[in-house]
Every structure is written in structure tokens, then in C-alpha cells.
Amino acid sequence: MTMSATTGCSHSVCPWWLGWALASPVRRWIEDPAALLGPWVAPGSRVLEVGPGMGFFTIPLAERVGPTGKVVCVDLQPRMLAGLTRRLRRRGLGDRVEIRGCEPTELGIEDLHESFDFAVLIHVLHEVPDPGATLAQMAAALRAGGRLLLVEPRGHCSDSQFAAELAAAAEAGLSLDPASPEHFGRKQRALLRRSGLPERG
Image (cartoon, rainbow, N blue to C red; front, side, top):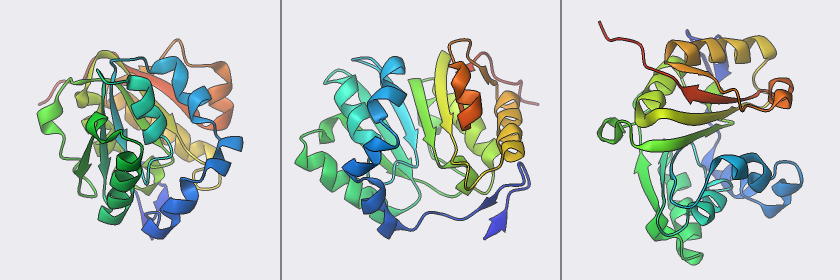
């Protein structure tokens, strides 16, 4: 386990073999993808998901964007992505989702600059070695006015650490969206909006 210089969050990557458990339908009783993502994703949307695991949120996203939309998933672990690929294929959703591997601090999405309407970062940011770099790359991939949903688990990231992540998001050009539900702040959730990126020196 290491420590992020940006936020102070300790981080370790979720092992791939937990992916099947995290994708279980039983999880919907605790965290319903339709309720969490539904208001922000429409047919035809282009969505970026970092750290999809085996697709607990990816499959509902792919269903919601429809045949004219696209979901791009980026993950560090090949076995997670292999499991996700199989699950998408079984549901006939493979053509709606592009799957990419990445490095710990490089998402490899430079070619997707200003391509997305919405981005998803759920239970992931506390695991990455440089949250600020991840947020900056995701912000650059959003269109002007695009939104990013940030969700962190309380058991792994404290209130002060989450506040530090929001500060890093602000540095990346992401501000709290006026549409962000008030209860999000009490659950370590935030709907962020790309309002402009910092100038590069």
C-alpha cells in the first residue's frame, strides 16, 4: 500500500478476483445504477468510465446510451477487462463499449480530447497513485459543460480526503455542478462540471 502525495489517501488496487462479487446483482440493493446514473445519461450519450471492474455500472450505461451512444472503459487490470468483455458479449452490448487498458498514472485517452458528455469515477479515485493527474486527464476528455460523477466509499476515504479530491478536481477545471443533489455531499458523492481547463504553462 502506498500514499498519494496529492490527497493523502492510502490506495491499493482492488484485486481482480473480487470483480465477480462487485458485479453481483445483489449489490443493486445497496447501490442502484439506474438511480445513480439515470438522470445524467441519455440515448446517444458518450460516456467515459475509469475503473469499470467487471461492469456493474458499465452494463447499465451501455443499455442507457443505446445503439447511437458509446461507452469507453479504461482499467489497469487485464483480467477485469477480460471479464467485462465476456459479460458485455453475452448481453449483446459489445459494440457499444470500447475497452482500453491503462497505466497507473496514464489513462491513454489523449486521442479522446473533448469527446465525452459524461464521465464516471466510482469507488476508484482513492486507489490511484496520482488523483490529480487522473482528474486532469478525465477533465480534458470532457466536452465543455460535460459532467463527471465522483463517488468514493466512506470506508476507504475519509471526509478530509474526499475534500482534498474535490480540491484536486477544481485544479483540473471541474467545479461542483449546480444540479448536484444536496445529499451527495453527505455520501461522498459529487457531480462535477467542466467549466474550463487551467492554462498550460
